[in-house]
Image (tube, rainbow, N blue to C red):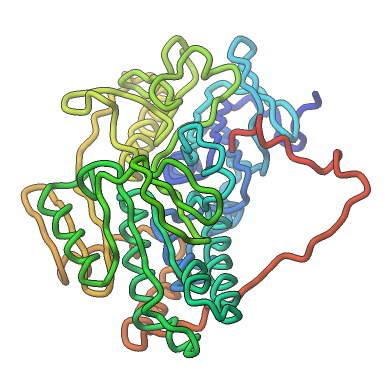
Length: 443
C-alpha cells in the first residue's frame, strides 16, 4: 500500500486523529499552532452537529446550517493536515495505519470515531428502519416523510393512507424524544397546511421505549415531565414496549402487539464499529475500547481513544462514562493539555469527568434540564437549551442562520424547507472500482 501523499516528513512528532466529531475536532484545534504535526482523518469533509439532526429531519433547519467544512476550520493552521478517508486497520507494532487513501506512520494515534446505530442483530430492522446518526440519514428521513405524504394523497382507503402518515420512533433517549416532539408539532401546525386534502386524524406519532421511562440518563422528574409534554402534543408514548421486528410496514412488539407504518426511526441503541488491529484486544461493552485514566487504550503506550468510543470507569460511572458530547469535549481538552505537557517534559494529568448536566427539548417552549443543583422544566429550560446549542455550533455564519431560522419558525411555525431532493441515479460500468468497502471502514 502506498503512503498518503503530500504529508511532509519534517521531523515533527506526528499526532494522527481519526474522526472529526466533537472530540476529534476539539483536539485538533487545540493542537494547532503547536510543535506537533497533526493529521485529522474523517470519511466526511465536514463536522456535523449531531444534537440538531432531528431539526434537519423535520425541515426546521438546512443541512448546511449544522455542518461545517473541516478544511475551512484549519485554513490558517500550517501544522494541521486533513484527509478524507476511511480507516481500515491499525498496525500498532509498526505505528502505522491503513486507510482508503494509503498508509501513514504515526507517533501518537487518537481514535475518536464515535459509534454507529446498534440494531442488536435484527436484520429486518436494520434493513427497513431509518437511523439518525448522520446528516445524510436526517435528510433521508425528511425525504421519506415527504415522499410518504405524497403517496398518501393517492390513497382512497383511509387505512392505507394512515400507513403512510403514521410515524413510529423507537428509543426514548434525547433523539427519540426531541424528534417525537418536532413531528407532533409538524402534525398540528405545518403538514395540514401542505396537505389540506388529507385527514390528519388518521396520523399518529408513536414513541416506543423498551425500559420503564424516557430519558434514562436524566432524573425521574425530567423523565415524567418529558412524557407529559409529549402526550400534551399528541404523541402516543409507550414505555416497557420492546420492538421485536419490522418488515417495512408492520411493527411487532415482543408481546406480539402490532402497529403499521411505512416510516420507523430506530434510535434505540449504539455500538462501536470494530477497528481492525485494536478491537480484538481492547473491545469491551458494545464495542467500546477500554482506556486508562489518561485515555490510553489498554496495552498500548501511544494509542488513545476519546468520546463515545472510549470506555473508562471512575466513581459513579461504573459502566463507563455516558456517551454524550460533553464527555468527549472534556477528554479532548485534557488530552490536548497532556500532549502540550509532553512537549515541556511535564507530568501528564489523569482525566476526571465533570457532569455539567443534561437537557432535552420537546417542543416550542417545552424542555427539561438537569443541572448541578437545579432542575428546570418548561420555558426557561427551553431557552437555556437554545442558548447552549447555539453557542456550541461551529462557525459564526452558521449560528446566525440557525438563530434566524429559529426566530422565524417560532413566530410563523412554517419553514419553507420541505423540499424533496432525490439524487439522480447513475449506472457505472466498473462498479467494483468505485465501491467503498464499508464493512471494513471505521470513519
